[in-house]
Amino acid sequence: LFRSGESPSRNVAVPACTFLRSSRTYISSPHIMLFAQSIKALLLAVPLVSSVKLTVNSSSLQNEDSRDARVYFLFLAVDKISNLDVWSAFFDSADPDKYRAFAHCKEKQCVTQMAGSPIIPVPTVASYYCTDLVSPMNQLLTYALSTDLGPVNARDKFAFISDSALPAKPFSQIYHTLASRESSDFCVFPPGEWADLPSDEDGLEVAVKVHQWITLSREHAEKASAMWQKGVMHNFMTYFKMNQMGWNNMLDNNFADNRNWGCLDEFWYMTALFGTLKKVKTTGEQSIELPGFTGSPLRIDKKAGWQGKCDTFVIWAKYMHSLGKNEQEDLMLSLDQPSVPHGGNWARPGWWDTLSTKGMQAIRDSDFLFVRKFIDKPTLHGGGDFAESYKKIVIDEAIVSPVG
Image 1 (spheres, helix red, strand yellow):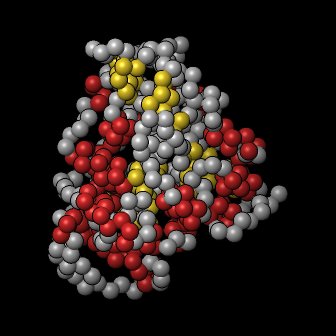
Image 2 (cartoon, rainbow, N blue to C red):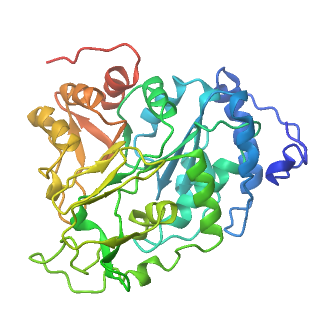
Image 3 (tube, one colour):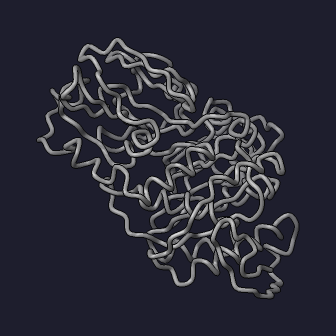
């Protein structure tokens, strides 16, 4: 299927091989191409070690018009992807030329779970909750950028997906939404969560905090992958003195308080790609244009709510009623009582273990492309098969009216 030197511009050499498998999963169209892609990724991934370094050729954007845009779904998983049957049905409905799906698994059983699915595991790298989840995120980016054969498209998108997330729309709608945007999607926390330091210049130096579940343009994906390999901002947590003070609910978090809380994955991409904000007034009341940022300009205002573009719904109880446009609250208010999720706390987002068909319809009708957190195999309120109902109401192209 592949020969050494087939894609010399990407510095990926794959041994020649011939392979035939009678698996119904891949021989049946439209999974032939995904099967071929899986074999290549598997060859690259054996053995599963963290020492592999791949090189991305940024000049490949010259071929952007030679194929349709593609969405790369990049899953971060620990021991499994919850509700994998729902995700498999989601990808079954997709044109295989318009997507690729990769997963970084922390545990071996997760890699085993991916067998026979459209999701390709990449070699595992060391990761540490909060202090470094950026290494596995950039491992996903590097493999997505380096192992996909053929031309590229400037409108390609790279969406990071939680192992506890579910799609909130049919594939075609998610694809059209992401491929039609030229910029990257960052879901920006209210400014009280941003990190700040006194500056030698006038004002503060500020790092903007965002959700981990971002969607990058191809330009930003290539840039981020290269910057991480060069060691850019690996010292972010130390530089901004993150999580070094005792937590005080009366003081934390406030804008311009020099008390900084959060995780590397919530700051690194925004800071690496756009830089820190300089000469920020302690009173806020500023704004800055950010080319390539969906929702620009960014408001530097301590009274601001969510900004940017939130592709993934996450329940943060503290900010459910924050100022400004609040798509999170809109979805919550549209849920029927059996579908209201657990609220979580200041440190952990809320989660679903039960959902009704009306709740599923509310998710499909929302502004979000993905929703989290879901336990594996949630309960369908009123009885029945959760996965089958979710497929019919949320994933299928035809809109099905919920029962009850």
